[in-house]
Image (cartoon, rainbow, N blue to C red; front, side):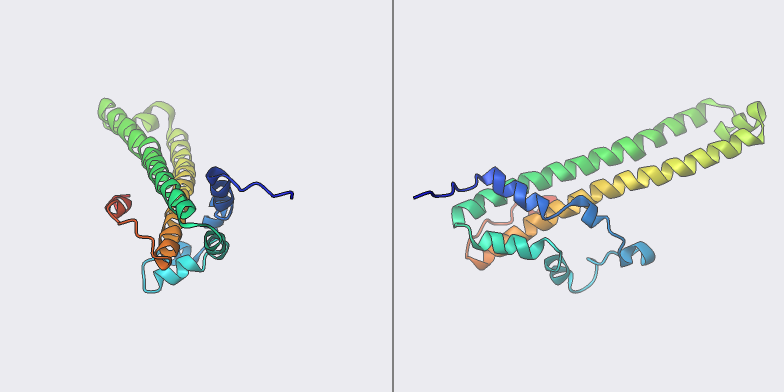
Length: 183
């Protein structure tokens, strides 16, 4: 009678997270070319459920009892909150702080940073600054895209668990759903 021990909730969570890698959310999509998210129009729910990890997650949840689904839903809610906070911190660190520093420097230099660099170091310094700025904007955009992809993956996991639970008649209430729209 060799029984395989049941996974802990955290082991189940690790398996669920593996179904939704962030790099998968960073795949080029139509929204990269037209600027409109694929989740903006009708059919958002079906697109979320068509995600590569959604089917395996639903199958995994079908094999679990209600108590385990509730525990995973709680973990998914905490995970979503952590991802949202990570996104906010990334925005502040990568956008707000540099803009604030540039604004202060621009105010401290007579006629602005560009004029100062051009007069002190020549036009080459100004073009170097522009090239550096464009490179930085690209890198910051990638960092923000990564944290946003993480947030979207966390939200998808949470919503898929909620939908599976609803099919089983488990009601959590959506009191905290308002928090998800603030990011």
